[in-house]
Image (cartoon, rainbow, N blue to C red; front, top):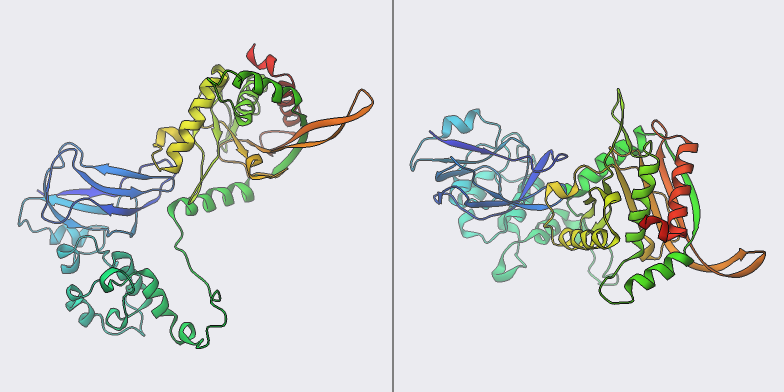
Length: 412
């Protein structure tokens, strides 16, 4: 009996996945642990292996490289060599089987429910002679979508291979080819497909912004003592504590003092979390990831520093796992290292608050009636007013400020 492998749900927010790369082809023998494909989720690209019991010959690939497919649709089919799976595919939720997919599994199969555009040439000649064309899977999928005849396209890739930019140029038609005099080499535009990560960011933060009533609290923090404390901690060279590490520690201690901020709106109830799990926003190429420092209030500065550095490195190389980014109860977004003085952030569900951290600015300040040089950092707390009121948010922010202005109190 044939075994159907569905598009897996690799994160709690994943609704569809993109096959970044297949490591097997139709006809290959599959055993437990065989690396089947690399799946791009909304947060990372992850290896997907065959599970126990998924053994046999790879008979069908339902999602080509670069192609997106919803969770639980047919990703591949494993069975006995020569087994007839046509009835299975006809009744499944994956794109229908085609000779092109079976002979060249890396090429994305066009969904059966998406007919070719009216203006496109009849598809039969293109499919019958695709074997003589050098074309990337993404370019082939894009050509089908835009109704571009692959035989009319000149490939600019290695060995004349047709790549994505060739399809985009061809689909632009006469408008793209009109300028004869190359007076404006930078004119025009480029359409970039939306990544799974960017789709999820857009969906979740739009829901947050337009569902949760936000309000914002900003406070200036005197960072003189924090600067001295950090210098003392790093003097031996054994540790490299960052200002962000100090903020994470101060926030975690503040959340223990003000549990109402460490809460979430769940519709029918407000959940107050006993554990303090601080998400730390990390910028990556495709958007933003929020790995979580768990039980941050119980960890030392050196432990927090080591975890955050490890998260940042693995986030940039797409090596984070779902357990790394799930379960946050509060989020910190720090843009101080990018030269930002102050900003507001959108609450990261299911949290009720997010702290936006600006850079440390050397400015004149008044101390003991005298104007002296000082170092100020601005913190802005975004709050979901359904859960946190102004007085509650202010009390929490004052506690964070107090910890940062007297770092020794965080060690108690």
